[in-house]
Image (tube, rainbow over the protein chains, first blue to last red):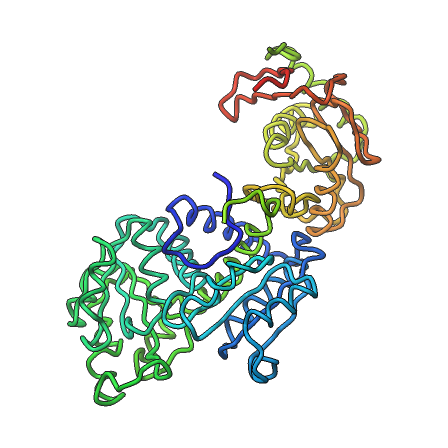
Length: 314
Length: 177
Protein backbone atom coordinates (compact mmCIF):
# COMPACT_ATOMS: atom_id res chain seq x y z
CA UNK A 1 0.00 0.00 0.00
CA UNK A 2 1.07 3.60 -0.37
CA UNK A 3 0.53 6.59 1.91
CA UNK A 4 -2.37 8.85 0.92
CA UNK A 5 -2.82 11.23 3.85
CA UNK A 6 -1.87 14.89 3.69
CA UNK A 7 -1.68 15.36 7.45
CA UNK A 8 -0.75 13.34 10.50
CA UNK A 9 -3.27 14.38 13.13
CA UNK A 10 -3.75 11.30 15.30
CA UNK A 11 -3.13 7.57 15.47
CA UNK A 12 -6.74 6.70 16.24
CA UNK A 13 -7.70 6.97 12.57
CA UNK A 14 -4.69 5.07 11.15
CA UNK A 15 -5.11 1.50 9.94
CA UNK A 16 -2.71 -1.31 10.85
CA UNK A 17 -1.33 -1.09 7.28
CA UNK A 18 -0.67 2.64 7.60
CA UNK A 19 1.02 2.23 10.98
CA UNK A 20 3.18 -0.56 9.58
CA UNK A 21 4.15 1.57 6.58
CA UNK A 22 5.40 4.33 8.89
CA UNK A 23 7.38 1.81 10.95
CA UNK A 24 8.94 0.22 7.86
CA UNK A 25 9.85 3.64 6.46
CA UNK A 26 11.34 4.67 9.83
CA UNK A 27 13.62 1.64 9.75
CA UNK A 28 15.25 2.92 6.53
CA UNK A 29 15.73 6.35 8.09
CA UNK A 30 17.30 4.87 11.20
CA UNK A 31 19.91 3.30 8.92
CA UNK A 32 20.59 6.75 7.45
CA UNK A 33 21.26 8.00 10.99
CA UNK A 34 23.97 5.37 11.40
CA UNK A 35 25.95 6.50 8.35
CA UNK A 36 28.84 8.96 8.27
CA UNK A 37 26.70 11.32 6.15
CA UNK A 38 23.38 11.41 7.95
CA UNK A 39 21.59 13.67 5.51
CA UNK A 40 19.47 12.89 2.44
CA UNK A 41 18.00 15.34 -0.10
CA UNK A 42 14.38 14.09 0.10
CA UNK A 43 12.87 17.41 1.29
CA UNK A 44 15.28 19.76 -0.47
CA UNK A 45 13.61 23.12 -1.10
CA UNK A 46 10.77 22.48 1.38
CA UNK A 47 10.11 24.63 4.41
CA UNK A 48 9.14 23.12 7.75
CA UNK A 49 7.73 25.38 10.45
CA UNK A 50 7.83 24.21 14.05
CA UNK A 51 4.84 26.06 15.51
CA UNK A 52 5.08 25.37 19.21
CA UNK A 53 2.37 27.24 21.07
CA UNK A 54 3.07 25.14 24.15
CA UNK A 55 6.61 24.74 25.44
CA UNK A 56 8.60 21.69 24.42
CA UNK A 57 12.27 21.18 23.92
CA UNK A 58 12.88 17.56 23.03
CA UNK A 59 10.03 17.13 20.57
CA UNK A 60 10.90 20.39 18.82
CA UNK A 61 14.58 19.50 18.60
CA UNK A 62 13.71 16.07 17.26
CA UNK A 63 11.44 17.52 14.55
CA UNK A 64 14.00 20.19 13.75
CA UNK A 65 16.80 17.68 13.31
CA UNK A 66 14.51 15.34 11.33
CA UNK A 67 13.68 18.17 8.90
CA UNK A 68 17.34 19.24 8.63
CA UNK A 69 18.45 15.68 7.91
CA UNK A 70 15.90 15.59 5.09
CA UNK A 71 17.48 18.82 3.73
CA UNK A 72 14.43 21.01 4.45
CA UNK A 73 14.68 24.58 5.71
CA UNK A 74 13.38 24.95 9.25
CA UNK A 75 11.80 27.85 11.10
CA UNK A 76 11.11 27.64 14.81
CA UNK A 77 8.14 29.62 16.00
CA UNK A 78 7.44 29.61 19.71
CA UNK A 79 4.54 31.21 21.53
CA UNK A 80 6.67 33.17 23.98
CA UNK A 81 8.32 35.16 21.22
CA UNK A 82 5.48 35.39 18.74
CA UNK A 83 2.55 37.37 17.50
CA UNK A 84 0.25 34.91 19.29
CA UNK A 85 1.18 36.76 22.45
CA UNK A 86 0.02 39.98 20.77
CA UNK A 87 -3.45 38.57 20.18
CA UNK A 88 -3.15 37.12 16.68
CA UNK A 89 -5.34 34.08 16.14
CA UNK A 90 -3.85 30.68 15.31
CA UNK A 91 -5.54 30.84 11.92
CA UNK A 92 -3.95 34.19 11.06
CA UNK A 93 -0.56 33.01 12.27
CA UNK A 94 -0.77 29.98 10.01
CA UNK A 95 -1.95 32.05 7.03
CA UNK A 96 1.08 34.26 7.50
CA UNK A 97 3.38 31.26 7.63
CA UNK A 98 1.80 29.92 4.46
CA UNK A 99 2.36 33.26 2.79
CA UNK A 100 6.04 32.50 3.35
CA UNK A 101 5.47 29.20 1.53
CA UNK A 102 5.62 26.88 4.50
CA UNK A 103 5.17 23.31 3.27
CA UNK A 104 4.86 21.63 6.67
CA UNK A 105 3.50 22.95 9.93
CA UNK A 106 4.44 20.98 13.00
CA UNK A 107 1.96 22.09 15.66
CA UNK A 108 2.28 21.71 19.41
CA UNK A 109 -0.77 23.21 21.12
CA UNK A 110 -2.40 23.07 24.53
CA UNK A 111 -5.88 22.65 23.07
CA UNK A 112 -7.06 19.21 21.97
CA UNK A 113 -8.07 19.28 18.32
CA UNK A 114 -5.98 22.33 17.36
CA UNK A 115 -4.16 20.41 14.56
CA UNK A 116 -7.49 19.13 13.21
CA UNK A 117 -8.80 22.68 13.14
CA UNK A 118 -5.67 23.81 11.31
CA UNK A 119 -5.92 21.00 8.77
CA UNK A 120 -9.35 22.20 7.66
CA UNK A 121 -7.93 25.30 6.00
CA UNK A 122 -4.15 24.86 5.79
CA UNK A 123 -2.51 24.25 2.42
CA UNK A 124 0.59 23.00 4.20
CA UNK A 125 0.91 19.49 5.61
CA UNK A 126 -0.02 19.53 9.30
CA UNK A 127 1.73 17.28 11.81
CA UNK A 128 0.38 17.05 15.33
CA UNK A 129 3.29 17.35 17.74
CA UNK A 130 0.99 17.03 20.77
CA UNK A 131 -2.43 18.61 21.30
CA UNK A 132 -3.63 19.01 24.89
CA UNK A 133 -4.40 15.65 26.47
CA UNK A 134 -5.57 14.27 23.13
CA UNK A 135 -2.72 12.73 21.11
CA UNK A 136 1.00 12.86 20.42
CA UNK A 137 1.15 10.68 17.31
CA UNK A 138 4.89 10.72 16.64
CA UNK A 139 5.59 9.74 20.26
CA UNK A 140 3.17 6.83 19.93
CA UNK A 141 4.84 5.80 16.67
CA UNK A 142 8.34 5.95 18.10
CA UNK A 143 7.29 3.91 21.12
CA UNK A 144 5.72 1.25 18.92
CA UNK A 145 8.75 1.35 16.59
CA UNK A 146 11.12 0.82 19.54
CA UNK A 147 9.05 -2.14 20.75
CA UNK A 148 8.88 -3.70 17.28
CA UNK A 149 12.61 -3.31 16.65
CA UNK A 150 13.44 -4.92 20.02
CA UNK A 151 10.75 -7.62 20.16
CA UNK A 152 10.31 -8.28 16.45
CA UNK A 153 6.54 -7.84 16.61
CA UNK A 154 3.68 -6.00 18.30
CA UNK A 155 0.86 -8.50 17.94
CA UNK A 156 0.22 -10.55 21.07
CA UNK A 157 2.60 -8.57 23.31
CA UNK A 158 1.47 -7.45 26.75
CA UNK A 159 2.21 -3.76 27.15
CA UNK A 160 1.64 -1.98 30.45
CA UNK A 161 1.37 1.79 30.42
CA UNK A 162 1.99 3.03 33.92
CA UNK A 163 1.25 6.39 35.45
CA UNK A 164 -0.77 9.41 34.51
CA UNK A 165 -3.10 8.06 31.86
CA UNK A 166 -5.95 10.52 32.16
CA UNK A 167 -3.93 13.59 31.28
CA UNK A 168 -1.54 11.90 28.87
CA UNK A 169 -1.65 12.37 25.11
CA UNK A 170 1.27 9.94 24.93
CA UNK A 171 -0.89 7.27 26.54
CA UNK A 172 -3.72 7.83 24.07
CA UNK A 173 -1.48 7.65 21.00
CA UNK A 174 0.18 4.52 22.39
CA UNK A 175 -3.18 2.95 23.16
CA UNK A 176 -4.47 3.40 19.61
CA UNK A 177 -1.32 2.23 17.86
CA UNK A 178 -0.81 -0.77 20.14
CA UNK A 179 -4.43 -1.91 20.06
CA UNK A 180 -4.66 -1.52 16.27
CA UNK A 181 -1.49 -3.59 15.85
CA UNK A 182 -2.81 -6.33 18.14
CA UNK A 183 -1.05 -5.80 21.49
CA UNK A 184 -2.82 -6.26 24.81
CA UNK A 185 -2.68 -3.00 26.74
CA UNK A 186 -2.87 -2.70 30.52
CA UNK A 187 -3.32 0.80 31.88
CA UNK A 188 -1.99 0.98 35.42
CA UNK A 189 -1.80 3.69 38.08
CA UNK A 190 -3.87 5.27 40.83
CA UNK A 191 -7.61 5.22 40.17
CA UNK A 192 -7.65 9.02 40.15
CA UNK A 193 -5.35 9.01 37.08
CA UNK A 194 -6.56 5.84 35.37
CA UNK A 195 -10.32 6.02 34.78
CA UNK A 196 -12.08 2.69 34.24
CA UNK A 197 -13.83 4.23 31.22
CA UNK A 198 -10.63 3.76 29.16
CA UNK A 199 -11.59 0.09 28.86
CA UNK A 200 -14.45 1.11 26.59
CA UNK A 201 -11.99 2.51 24.00
CA UNK A 202 -10.95 -0.90 22.68
CA UNK A 203 -11.52 -4.55 23.67
CA UNK A 204 -7.75 -5.07 24.08
CA UNK A 205 -7.52 -2.50 26.88
CA UNK A 206 -7.62 -3.38 30.57
CA UNK A 207 -7.37 -1.07 33.58
CA UNK A 208 -5.50 -2.09 36.74
CA UNK A 209 -5.05 0.01 39.88
CA UNK A 210 -2.61 -2.45 41.41
CA UNK A 211 1.02 -2.17 40.36
CA UNK A 212 1.98 -5.80 40.98
CA UNK A 213 -0.98 -6.92 38.91
CA UNK A 214 -0.07 -4.42 36.19
CA UNK A 215 3.54 -5.58 35.99
CA UNK A 216 2.78 -9.31 35.98
CA UNK A 217 3.53 -10.87 32.60
CA UNK A 218 4.28 -7.53 30.92
CA UNK A 219 6.60 -7.68 27.90
CA UNK A 220 6.89 -3.89 27.93
CA UNK A 221 6.43 -1.35 30.72
CA UNK A 222 6.00 2.19 29.43
CA UNK A 223 6.21 4.73 32.25
CA UNK A 224 4.60 8.13 31.93
CA UNK A 225 5.60 11.31 33.62
CA UNK A 226 3.19 12.81 36.13
CA UNK A 227 1.78 15.80 34.25
CA UNK A 228 1.56 18.39 37.02
CA UNK A 229 0.79 21.07 34.49
CA UNK A 230 -2.41 19.40 33.27
CA UNK A 231 -3.88 18.46 36.65
CA UNK A 232 -6.41 20.87 38.02
CA UNK A 233 -6.66 19.08 41.37
CA UNK A 234 -3.99 16.92 42.87
CA UNK A 235 -4.72 13.31 41.97
CA UNK A 236 -2.64 11.84 44.80
CA UNK A 237 -1.64 13.02 48.28
CA UNK A 238 2.09 13.49 47.67
CA UNK A 239 4.92 12.75 45.28
CA UNK A 240 6.40 10.52 47.99
CA UNK A 241 3.24 8.46 48.18
CA UNK A 242 3.08 8.10 44.39
CA UNK A 243 6.74 7.01 44.32
CA UNK A 244 6.19 4.41 47.03
CA UNK A 245 2.98 3.00 45.52
CA UNK A 246 3.68 3.26 41.76
CA UNK A 247 7.36 4.09 41.32
CA UNK A 248 9.36 1.49 39.41
CA UNK A 249 12.12 0.56 41.87
CA UNK A 250 14.75 -2.21 41.72
CA UNK A 251 12.62 -4.19 44.22
CA UNK A 252 9.62 -4.00 41.90
CA UNK A 253 11.80 -4.85 38.90
CA UNK A 254 12.28 -8.27 40.50
CA UNK A 255 8.64 -8.94 39.59
CA UNK A 256 9.04 -7.81 35.99
CA UNK A 257 10.12 -10.28 33.32
CA UNK A 258 13.89 -10.28 32.78
CA UNK A 259 13.42 -9.67 29.05
CA UNK A 260 10.80 -6.94 29.43
CA UNK A 261 11.54 -3.47 28.03
CA UNK A 262 11.39 -0.40 30.27
CA UNK A 263 10.34 2.71 28.38
CA UNK A 264 9.72 6.35 29.21
CA UNK A 265 8.94 9.24 26.84
CA UNK A 266 10.97 11.68 28.97
CA UNK A 267 11.68 13.89 30.68
CA UNK A 268 12.06 11.39 33.49
CA UNK A 269 11.52 12.27 37.16
CA UNK A 270 14.22 10.17 38.82
CA UNK A 271 13.03 8.83 42.16
CA UNK A 272 9.37 9.51 41.35
CA UNK A 273 7.96 7.26 38.62
CA UNK A 274 11.29 5.55 37.99
CA UNK A 275 14.35 4.83 40.14
CA UNK A 276 17.74 5.75 38.71
CA UNK A 277 18.88 2.10 38.83
CA UNK A 278 15.97 1.17 36.59
CA UNK A 279 16.24 4.13 34.22
CA UNK A 280 19.94 3.39 33.67
CA UNK A 281 19.55 -0.39 33.89
CA UNK A 282 19.99 -3.04 31.21
CA UNK A 283 16.29 -3.31 30.42
CA UNK A 284 15.87 0.43 29.82
CA UNK A 285 15.49 1.55 26.20
CA UNK A 286 14.80 5.19 27.10
CA UNK A 287 17.65 6.68 25.06
CA UNK A 288 16.95 4.34 22.15
CA UNK A 289 13.47 5.90 22.07
CA UNK A 290 15.08 9.29 21.50
CA UNK A 291 17.19 7.98 18.59
CA UNK A 292 14.18 6.22 17.11
CA UNK A 293 12.08 9.36 17.48
CA UNK A 294 14.29 11.09 14.95
CA UNK A 295 13.89 8.24 12.44
CA UNK A 296 10.11 8.12 12.93
CA UNK A 297 9.75 11.88 12.40
CA UNK A 298 11.87 11.70 9.25
CA UNK A 299 9.59 8.90 8.04
CA UNK A 300 6.44 10.93 8.75
CA UNK A 301 7.73 14.00 6.89
CA UNK A 302 8.91 11.81 4.00
CA UNK A 303 5.54 10.06 3.66
CA UNK A 304 3.48 13.26 3.91
CA UNK A 305 5.66 14.92 1.27
CA UNK A 306 4.59 12.38 -1.32
CA UNK A 307 1.88 12.93 -3.88
CA UNK A 308 0.26 15.82 -5.64
CA UNK A 309 -1.85 18.01 -3.45
CA UNK A 310 -5.52 17.79 -4.26
CA UNK A 311 -5.21 14.27 -5.64
CA UNK A 312 -4.86 12.76 -2.22
CA UNK A 313 -7.46 11.87 0.32
CA UNK A 314 -7.63 14.26 3.29
CA UNK B 1 0.09 -8.27 -25.34
CA UNK B 2 3.72 -9.08 -24.68
CA UNK B 3 6.74 -10.60 -26.37
CA UNK B 4 9.72 -12.44 -24.90
CA UNK B 5 12.94 -10.44 -25.30
CA UNK B 6 15.26 -12.73 -23.36
CA UNK B 7 14.41 -16.30 -22.42
CA UNK B 8 16.19 -18.00 -19.49
CA UNK B 9 19.09 -19.54 -21.45
CA UNK B 10 19.80 -16.34 -23.36
CA UNK B 11 19.51 -14.33 -20.14
CA UNK B 12 22.17 -16.54 -18.57
CA UNK B 13 24.50 -16.15 -21.58
CA UNK B 14 23.95 -12.41 -21.65
CA UNK B 15 24.94 -12.08 -17.98
CA UNK B 16 28.02 -14.27 -18.56
CA UNK B 17 29.10 -12.01 -21.44
CA UNK B 18 28.57 -8.88 -19.32
CA UNK B 19 30.70 -10.40 -16.54
CA UNK B 20 33.54 -11.03 -19.02
CA UNK B 21 33.34 -7.43 -20.21
CA UNK B 22 33.44 -6.14 -16.63
CA UNK B 23 36.49 -8.31 -15.90
CA UNK B 24 38.23 -7.21 -19.07
CA UNK B 25 37.64 -3.51 -18.42
CA UNK B 26 38.80 -3.77 -14.76
CA UNK B 27 42.16 -5.53 -14.75
CA UNK B 28 42.81 -4.57 -11.10
CA UNK B 29 40.06 -6.92 -10.02
CA UNK B 30 40.94 -6.72 -6.31
CA UNK B 31 39.42 -3.21 -6.28
CA UNK B 32 36.24 -4.24 -8.08
CA UNK B 33 32.86 -4.03 -6.32
CA UNK B 34 29.26 -4.32 -7.51
CA UNK B 35 26.39 -2.22 -6.19
CA UNK B 36 22.88 -3.30 -7.19
CA UNK B 37 20.17 -0.65 -7.34
CA UNK B 38 17.01 -1.67 -5.50
CA UNK B 39 15.05 -3.51 -6.53
CA UNK B 40 15.68 -4.86 -10.03
CA UNK B 41 19.45 -4.36 -9.93
CA UNK B 42 19.93 -6.56 -6.88
CA UNK B 43 19.36 -9.89 -8.60
CA UNK B 44 21.55 -8.89 -11.57
CA UNK B 45 24.37 -7.78 -9.23
CA UNK B 46 24.23 -11.16 -7.51
CA UNK B 47 24.38 -13.04 -10.82
CA UNK B 48 27.23 -10.88 -12.13
CA UNK B 49 29.15 -11.39 -8.88
CA UNK B 50 28.80 -15.18 -9.16
CA UNK B 51 29.95 -15.11 -12.80
CA UNK B 52 32.86 -12.78 -11.95
CA UNK B 53 33.98 -15.07 -9.15
CA UNK B 54 34.24 -17.95 -11.66
CA UNK B 55 36.21 -15.77 -14.07
CA UNK B 56 38.52 -14.06 -11.54
CA UNK B 57 38.93 -16.85 -9.03
CA UNK B 58 38.04 -14.59 -6.11
CA UNK B 59 34.87 -13.14 -4.65
CA UNK B 60 33.72 -9.64 -5.60
CA UNK B 61 31.93 -7.65 -2.87
CA UNK B 62 28.28 -6.81 -3.58
CA UNK B 63 26.27 -3.96 -2.07
CA UNK B 64 22.62 -2.92 -2.27
CA UNK B 65 21.57 0.66 -2.87
CA UNK B 66 18.09 2.10 -2.39
CA UNK B 67 17.79 5.41 -4.21
CA UNK B 68 14.23 6.38 -3.19
CA UNK B 69 15.34 9.17 -0.84
CA UNK B 70 17.33 10.69 -3.73
CA UNK B 71 14.60 10.72 -6.38
CA UNK B 72 13.73 14.02 -8.05
CA UNK B 73 9.96 13.42 -8.11
CA UNK B 74 9.20 12.79 -4.43
CA UNK B 75 6.52 15.47 -4.20
CA UNK B 76 4.87 14.37 -7.44
CA UNK B 77 4.00 10.81 -6.53
CA UNK B 78 2.99 8.77 -3.49
CA UNK B 79 6.02 8.26 -1.25
CA UNK B 80 7.93 5.22 -2.49
CA UNK B 81 8.53 2.20 -0.30
CA UNK B 82 12.03 2.27 1.14
CA UNK B 83 14.28 -0.77 0.86
CA UNK B 84 17.57 -1.51 2.61
CA UNK B 85 20.85 0.06 1.57
CA UNK B 86 23.69 -2.28 2.51
CA UNK B 87 27.23 -1.47 1.45
CA UNK B 88 29.40 -3.33 3.96
CA UNK B 89 32.76 -2.43 2.37
CA UNK B 90 34.53 0.95 2.15
CA UNK B 91 33.95 2.61 -1.22
CA UNK B 92 37.20 4.58 -1.03
CA UNK B 93 39.50 3.53 -3.87
CA UNK B 94 37.04 1.02 -5.32
CA UNK B 95 36.11 0.47 -8.95
CA UNK B 96 32.35 0.36 -8.43
CA UNK B 97 30.00 -1.07 -11.02
CA UNK B 98 26.47 0.21 -10.43
CA UNK B 99 23.99 -2.42 -11.58
CA UNK B 100 20.37 -1.99 -12.65
CA UNK B 101 18.01 -4.12 -14.71
CA UNK B 102 16.53 -1.52 -17.07
CA UNK B 103 18.01 1.83 -18.15
CA UNK B 104 15.30 4.25 -19.30
CA UNK B 105 15.16 7.96 -18.42
CA UNK B 106 18.45 7.84 -16.51
CA UNK B 107 16.87 9.47 -13.45
CA UNK B 108 17.34 6.42 -11.26
CA UNK B 109 21.04 6.34 -12.14
CA UNK B 110 21.33 10.07 -11.37
CA UNK B 111 19.77 9.39 -7.95
CA UNK B 112 22.05 6.38 -7.47
CA UNK B 113 25.17 8.46 -8.13
CA UNK B 114 24.08 10.92 -5.43
CA UNK B 115 23.21 8.11 -3.02
CA UNK B 116 26.58 6.46 -3.65
CA UNK B 117 28.45 9.72 -3.09
CA UNK B 118 26.89 9.95 0.39
CA UNK B 119 28.35 6.55 1.24
CA UNK B 120 31.92 7.24 0.14
CA UNK B 121 34.20 8.23 -2.71
CA UNK B 122 34.92 5.41 -5.14
CA UNK B 123 37.85 5.74 -7.55
CA UNK B 124 35.60 5.10 -10.53
CA UNK B 125 31.93 4.35 -11.07
CA UNK B 126 30.72 2.37 -14.07
CA UNK B 127 27.20 1.37 -15.01
CA UNK B 128 25.93 -2.08 -16.03
CA UNK B 129 22.35 -2.64 -17.18
CA UNK B 130 20.61 -5.70 -18.52
CA UNK B 131 18.35 -3.76 -20.91
CA UNK B 132 18.88 -0.28 -22.34
CA UNK B 133 15.49 0.76 -23.67
CA UNK B 134 16.42 4.31 -24.71
CA UNK B 135 14.46 7.54 -24.04
CA UNK B 136 17.13 9.14 -21.88
CA UNK B 137 16.20 12.41 -20.14
CA UNK B 138 19.69 12.98 -18.71
CA UNK B 139 23.21 12.72 -20.16
CA UNK B 140 23.82 9.21 -18.82
CA UNK B 141 24.96 6.09 -20.65
CA UNK B 142 25.81 2.54 -19.59
CA UNK B 143 29.32 1.03 -19.76
CA UNK B 144 27.99 -2.53 -19.98
CA UNK B 145 24.71 -3.36 -21.71
CA UNK B 146 23.10 -6.80 -21.87
CA UNK B 147 20.68 -5.89 -24.63
CA UNK B 148 19.84 -2.68 -26.47
CA UNK B 149 16.10 -2.65 -26.98
CA UNK B 150 14.30 0.02 -29.00
CA UNK B 151 10.97 0.70 -27.31
CA UNK B 152 8.14 3.19 -27.36
CA UNK B 153 7.22 5.10 -24.21
CA UNK B 154 3.92 3.24 -24.24
CA UNK B 155 5.64 -0.06 -23.57
CA UNK B 156 6.91 -1.68 -20.37
CA UNK B 157 9.98 -3.86 -19.92
CA UNK B 158 9.37 -6.61 -17.34
CA UNK B 159 12.43 -8.37 -15.97
CA UNK B 160 11.12 -11.40 -14.10
CA UNK B 161 14.05 -12.58 -11.94
CA UNK B 162 13.86 -16.05 -10.43
CA UNK B 163 15.19 -14.44 -7.22
CA UNK B 164 11.98 -12.39 -7.04
CA UNK B 165 9.73 -15.36 -7.81
CA UNK B 166 9.75 -14.95 -11.61
CA UNK B 167 10.62 -17.23 -14.52
CA UNK B 168 13.94 -15.62 -15.53
CA UNK B 169 12.60 -14.02 -18.68
CA UNK B 170 12.50 -10.47 -19.96
CA UNK B 171 9.25 -9.37 -21.57
CA UNK B 172 8.23 -6.32 -23.58
CA UNK B 173 4.64 -5.45 -22.74
CA UNK B 174 2.22 -3.05 -24.43
CA UNK B 175 0.53 -0.55 -22.15
CA UNK B 176 -2.82 -2.26 -21.85
CA UNK B 177 -4.87 -1.70 -18.71
